[in-house]
Length: 313
Image (cartoon, helix red, strand yellow):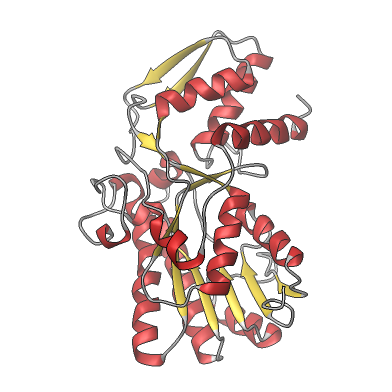
């Protein structure tokens, strides 16, 4: 509790999916000076807005969660936008934080930064052993540059920036917009809509062979806060739950939990994305004691329950 008591903390993206969990946990830990810039009044792509934000709030720490993100379809449609906006937000924030003497910067990367054919489980030292999976490479590389910047600034300026690599997140308050959502909310929405409309089938992208790892949003928030408190080294750190599930098995589980009884049509003309994803989470455990607590099925049940209530299902 005492760590956060007098800290002034800016949480970019603090009104978003992950950000709401992080802000709630900061409040719980006794942090009374939390500043959440809203896009309506603070455009983090603009240097002048970043300068104004940091001068007004004078933070001890910046936790940079803001990102322009989406699933495979959104990445394919917006490679330039995803690259430019994520890069400009992060690079300018880190530079202005350094210039204004911010004591610590917590940068969030992405599992999309890993090479396409990384050996499973992904170890942090594998990060530079190849090019990311093509459908999300521009996003992944934009975020990866914040690691380069963090390490370079630590080396030259003694700037305390850390870099965390979370896997795909899920949970209540996720983005359920079919144009930009990730796989779990997209599947939940499809199954519930099909059930409501008595549809006989749903269409799912790819072959189902690809694997993914998922981290419950509140667990991710806990990992970020623990790292913010305890981790002060240049090496990147994975944040994950340490398991792997095929998309085929994921679909079967969501079908079961939503009660959809129709047929699954696999659209094999659509990409699978990265073949496999599963993180080695031992560094996070060793460095700041993070272990994900939420069982996957329980997390899915909470997510489905939240979405059902939201749409009055």
